[in-house]
Image 1 (cartoon, helix red, strand yellow):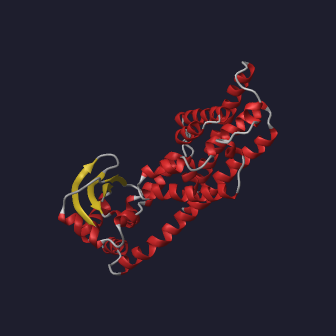
Image 2 (cartoon, rainbow, N blue to C red):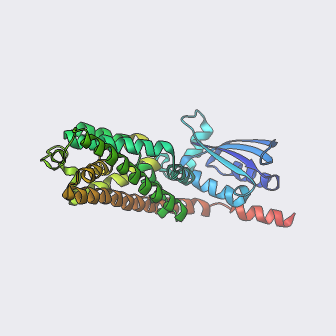
Image 3 (cartoon, rainbow, N blue to C red):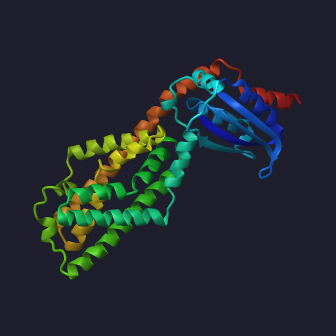
Length: 327
């Protein structure tokens, strides 16, 4: 179930409460007339079957809550209620497949915001990856993948394309470019310092590395894995299964490629510069393509069920407009 906390302008309060109580997919409706202070209005709350949440929220926005009102969305971990069971049965589709698009969009906007923590984690992950290259350590490569925060803006870019949000796409791509540029620059400086101190040399990068050589040598499978990882990552976000993201992090070599790239630049190893840069580009491109495609497919699959349910009921938005016009 999804819990909605609403601030409803007085002019449409009766219509909103009437709609919520008449929709079988909605339950546990509570109303506190005049309780909202900022913005002013009535406070209303309800629980909605997850697979119907996006449709109910869209209807509420069309009824006037997108302007003067407010909608807060919360996940309900569990509920014990027969009316909740009836609401879930009334909603078409499976609850696990329900996508709350406003939540997806809100999460994407947060992931596309520039923050000190994002840059810090990406710099740390890239540096760990560079050390993994020097030591030819597969364990450190996995550690760098898990620490890297880059999938957040990648997913945000997918959402920006699929939902037609150019500003979100721009912010996500800018964060990715600036983040990797900063991480590579920091790692180059540290590598130059280590080179000056005699800790590393060009041979540490150019020598055969059976455990980490794949980082700078992309092939067709690199793109295939990126496609699969991007789809799995976006699916984990829309389905609310964040635990699956760990598998995504350790499937693609974005951060390791950035670490190898920084090390190759600092120690002047031309072959690995081009190879690591290509690997990084292949992984980012593949994940954005598959993530965007999956979101587009999910939107197409959910629309027929919503249209079928709406067709069987009066349009609450049209009914509200008619009532206001009559009054």
